Image (cartoon, rainbow, N blue to C red; front, side):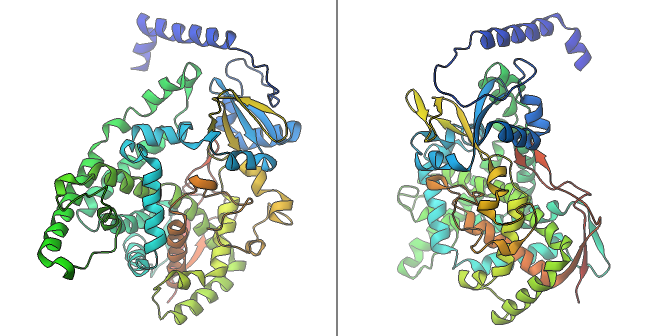
Length: 499
């Protein structure tokens, strides 16, 4: 097929035309008269830093920082992006009206092409989820824990004989998806929705990490190709809507029948139905099911991708670091005894102080290289506190690597794994830990994500003995500047029942 295309005259003309357009746009690009940050030198015009950004991003960022300091620009995929370090983070997060998170390419893929109904009013969607977890996390703690235990039994199971998991991330992904789907849509046709979302996650990851070759011409072209398959996986929404409509009809029918005696379930769906803008009356046909389905989809997608990615690194560190195991296991036993084997509230979860610090350290050392980009949306340009200026439209990312490996912010020997360096929870917002963002766009599900990770590792410790298959494995896997799932085989973990 590829050979046929290459030999096709029209295809050759298209390629030549795209290259010519690219050269033209590059040569006629307006040169800024602003006091811009230095541009890191590159060897190849047009391509710029793109290849290194994809294949060796960490080294590129470290070398650029050492040469140019904490703020500089790279030429990637046909456009300049500006990287800022720890001293300029405040500019991005304090001046949020000047930098738009939703205009970034990654947020654009999610918002415009996949979950459009939720992103049409993103502030309202985020507020819904933030309010739900703030109000109800205590009330659903037992539900989350029981589903974690069920998920572990299904996807890890009994390990009377040592059982090797060559891809430990897959097991965690399945457990997290099991918990999320039960929390959001119940057990209704679980297998159907689960398989659907596995395919959606696979397509989403491919689109998210797709090489942005066509961005050399225009970002719009990349979006069209990268999201082609995603825009036609609309059946995920239809299946969710089909099931939640059945639940909604049943609840409205019971509410009309029982009146004040009806006891509303505590779940995400009911939280939506309690809002008069989402469900203005007791008519299922007037419920905004598209928005509900999109918000549910976002959280299931997060559970099966970024949340489980990071948790898989924490699990690997747990299996690898025998020097920490005894202390963590002892804490788990003590808390389990205090709670009679059942967590009822967030206060019970907060007792896992040592495990929380361990997870936070695992997250810190297995993080993205850069923070998600924000677009400068000022009328003409923005001036940083250090005097550098960037034009409106410029993408800006935070150098997370510098932040997490800085001795002043992280304490002595920041490249070494040391949970005791932390004195606050992984959900705590501060300058030296930006995993869940900062400011008004902070992740609304961060408490849920950390709680789920803690509960899962807690019950795994109580049930199994763990060890890594390879003594010196380094499963860390960066896809461009993103942290991806731990490398299969290199992240192999051996599970064995502890009884």
